[in-house]
Image 1: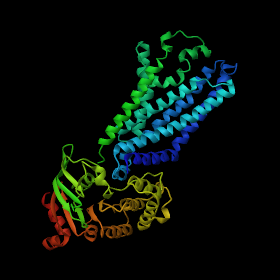
Image 2: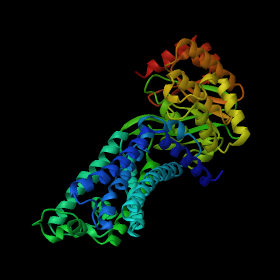
Image 3: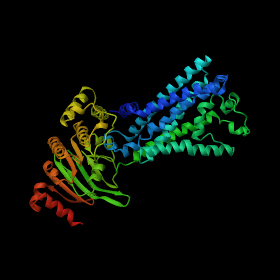
Image 4: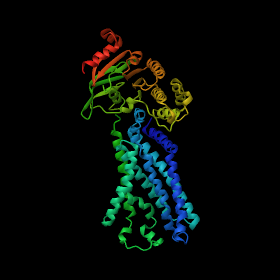
Amino acid sequence: MSEFEKLRVVTGYEFLKHIRRRRLYIILGLTILVEAAVLIAVPLLLEEGYPDNVMVMAAMLSIGPSLATIGAVFFAGDAIAGEFESKTGFILFTNPVRRITLVTGKYLAGLAAVAMLIVLGYIIVSISLLVIYGTVPVETAKSFGLCLLYGGSVLSITFFFSSISKGSMGATVITLVFIMVISSVIDGILIMADAPHWFMISTNGDSIATVYGGYELFLEGLPMGGTHMPDRWFQSPDINLMIVSMVIYLVAGFALSLWIGRRRQLS
Amino acid sequence: MPEPIVIESLSKYYNKFLAVDNLSLSVTENSNVGLLGPNGAGKSTTLKILCGLIRASSGTVYVDGISVAEKPEQALSRIGAIIETPEFYTYLTPEETLSYLGRLRGMNGDELRQRIKEVIRLVRLEEWSTVRIEKFSRGMKQRLGLAQALLHDPPVLILDEPALGLDPRGVVEFRELIEEAGREKTVFFASHQLVEVAQICQEVAIIDRGHLLAYDKITNLEEKYQSLESAYLQLTGEIH
């Protein structure tokens, strides 16, 4: 039996795990809830209905699929750490299958689960834009691609933390703190210092919305009440650089988790 | 034919703690060997190295002549193992678990379905075969652990305290199952339950603090020390 066939088996059963877990449906519910909240709240807050510019509304609706990518953290937190913490590895690792195959299968299953949520999110975005504006901008496809890439990056970072953590909860919390706190704080400092920040994972997540026209779009499209903050704070980094950054997170995080996962001993 | 299990000059350090100290022994085909020793003697560490779960600090272990360190997949294909209290994915049923593990071992189709039925019947889990494992007691997980170890009909069984935590009836039933399986297989069986080992095995290796103290037929040890219990107590008492 080839390792590729074993990879198919592992991926299939790991995907079944995601399908049977409550967390998938909680994140799906949250995604739908957030999209519904945007669709209801925006016309109420603007008083004149939806923004005239379809790009502004499309960017605002991208919050739902962006939220779905965070689901990757909850799907992958226990991917490697869980085998050691719950001791299921004592059964799984005594089978004639390479650790690399097991970790890769778990990664592909997690990616498939996140992609499923992202696809559902963009179906909601597309239908909403079609109903309200009668059109779906081509940037939605770009946003979808960036969202998938961001989801893959978040998954890789979570796999890395899962490979070095003793417990699943620890891996999940560390990843969330890394992405939402540490990265965001450093991001903010770099912006204020007028230094490049395209390589921060928190900035990379913004690309899902800024692909529609950058932060400037929100200032033009929404009544923000005026601002005295420097323009540079609202300049989004080059999308191409952010793609490079996300690919690096994806490849490096996954490669490190493979290497550590292969070497880790179940004592 | 190479011997099913060969351990050569095996040592294992956990940081500075020496868990296994230059251990060498070999297990002949179709023999049932008990690995006896007090807690912390190095029994589980030895079995984990045999199953490729941890790496040796020095020395080599072979299964059917295949080095576990160099060719782990080939070596593991010849082993069925229960290490510690087996834990399973709680979102799967026993049938699904066995199907997953069977497919990882290259089994499929009718052959796999038939074999799953056989091992589930053997460990008496028929009524629970389609119930998710999250509802299982420790004893039921032990039974499922034995089922997965026997699923691919391996020539070598490696069992680490397989009856740990079972009630008295469970212990007796489990012992019978292992005895039955051990008639056609090589069984290497770690325990500190002397009665259990004496009923299943013909030979024992007694270790303490990673050292091999004795490796002989139970009958020979009984002759020399009057009983297996005396042999165990005298041998493991000497180095304390």
